[in-house]
Image (cartoon, rainbow, N blue to C red; front, side, top):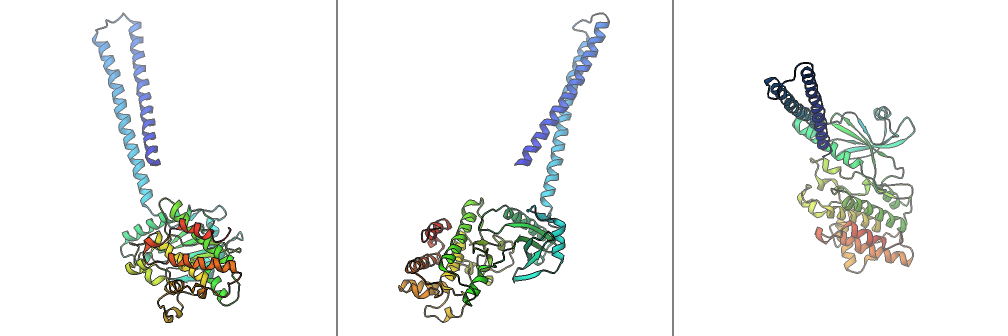
Length: 397
């Protein structure tokens, strides 16, 4: 819209300049005619010479207007075509920086060096690296563009990826990981984020299961509240709405105070060749049935959040073989629902976090919230907006 307004302004300015030029030329001719007329005998008002002068003036003005209009239209078309060309051309080769503290040359140099591998998944690897200015960053290497057959399709894929990354870089919320830069590299791409030393929620829960760290109920509830506030921002404050598509503990980073930050928001959809059902135990039933993004909604994100809340409450991993052997069978969600309906929700709680009576009541209420989030039908799940109120009412935040 802004580009169109700029083109209109250019046309108006050029028209005005051409009009001034030919109008001044006409006035000059008129003065010359008057001078000649005053130096000689007076001309009759109906003389052919005077009529021809008036015709020349009118013709000059009209010619100037037509020429100016045509020139302005041609210039505007050229500008518009150039802008379209820029928009259609992927700009993925050089680094695109969104943070003033990251220098492009320094970033390129750091990416070429050997970096510490933090983890990997089916569509990328995570690294830790340090820039020359001492700034520690987390870098994610994305793969997957090479699976597109046609060159035109690859360009379209890259252009769509660039547009999504530009949009994600504008997100600002305390519970979201901020995209600081990205660098195109052949058929892959580097994404740059702030480095969070505590690691992911998956790392912390694994250490808690091994009694390496004690994660109290207050901290776990704070993590759940932070996650749902991040989803609330994506679902209700972003226009158009942004869905996460791949919410799970490994995509929830924790800072030193266990404040959560959602990572990889919206990135999973960029890889249409990936099977959602095969990449996460946190996928909703509708996604397992469809195995695509066609049926994915904000309520699908809520199901994934319900699984994370269930992990925080029980301390169990959803892939634990225990759930296949349990009387209720199937999954963590079904097991939790079975105990909640039987009035035995306390049996599901992680023994490492059971404390005072007040906290236990909060945890049992949280089990009910998790079960509702894990409903088979999306319409039966609460929204992220409703969940913020539910969870913050359990404890004073």
